[in-house]
Image (cartoon, rainbow, N blue to C red):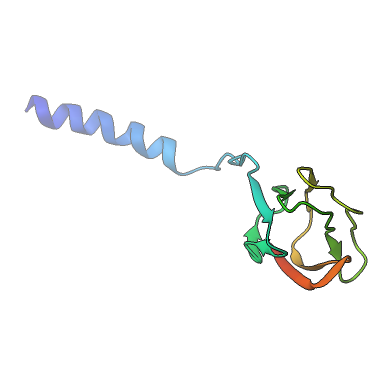
Length: 111
């Protein structure tokens, strides 16, 4: 009998916590790294959430850039052993190229 009483008391308490309204869950932004090395972006494609950051790190001994094909952003030349960061705020697909080496391309998909 005691077990039934405890269950009867516990169930209403659980039900009252589960039904009305949900608190918004905040998400901690994530930082992703794209390595520029051997005249290539690695990884060449990346999917992130709006508010996340992407850091391009130049490991080559000469400059590269990260330039949106639609003109939305431009890192200007990133020297050897330097980096550049972008934090997209809206969903969409961002295609980019190295303006100094047009065969280098990449894509960031922002959800």
